[in-house]
Image (cartoon, rainbow, N blue to C red):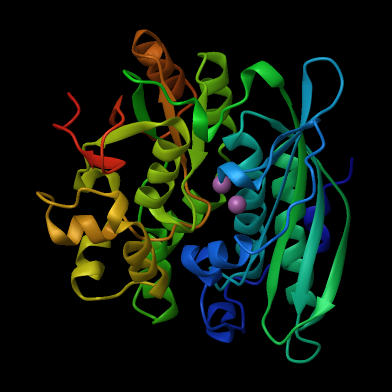
Length: 362
Ligand code: CO
Ligand code: CO
């Protein structure tokens, strides 16, 4: 097959600063958790088809529909405003982020439909082409195919995909699958919301921009495959609602408490510095306001605590795994060169849903 990338020129420094054209960047552009739930709570739900195994009611990462013997369809959609200035990188990150929810459920993505909202003036066709090319190349890397899409005029640029994957029904990674005694692992460093806010303000150094972009564009595939292989039953990807938001949703759905052992090593470089200087997206405060009743906040240094409410774009997985399988799982992550930290453990249900544990052993 002819390499497609050759057809699209990729200037070293784009003449448009994409992040400067939108009010909020990436997953920080999402509705806050409170606003969204208030609207969803008003819906009259029709009777659920019995083949619908997972819908939005459990706040899982994707919908699951029974299809064939022991096989299920895993479906999700995610699109957002530019999170970085380089159009090709933006396309890559948007694709990695949209694909992630399929892996967060233990599935393999098969097909993707592109969604593009773009202003009809001011953006050169080359810029649009680079965004689409970044997405196309990333979906290809994931082993999936872009089979179509839809575009619409919109004053703010937005891009992403609806993704369909498949999974084995008995191997699904659910929000509700965490069990007492499980160990917890986090597979990407935190702080993308903080660092991309610094970028939007023109205060992020190039080396760190490169690092955060590479992390956001990296796929959660290897982490998901390792989790499924080692018998995990629960995972979620850390995105707009932050580590503490997504952890509390897993705790609630599973009827357990998550005991986390946060450390500055969980964060990308300079995140604490920026948080201390109040450089962070508005979503951080919205997440804290909504989820703080779920978290026993006492005893953690304030700057580190705030960083744990940072909305992530294309964040890693939070995986729960039985203690007897934890070491083999960790070895599998190392073999696959997946960044990870042991993040704590799962305890009996208590209030609130998330508390601090003693630091994980080194
Ligand atoms: Co998700
Ligand atoms: Co999502």
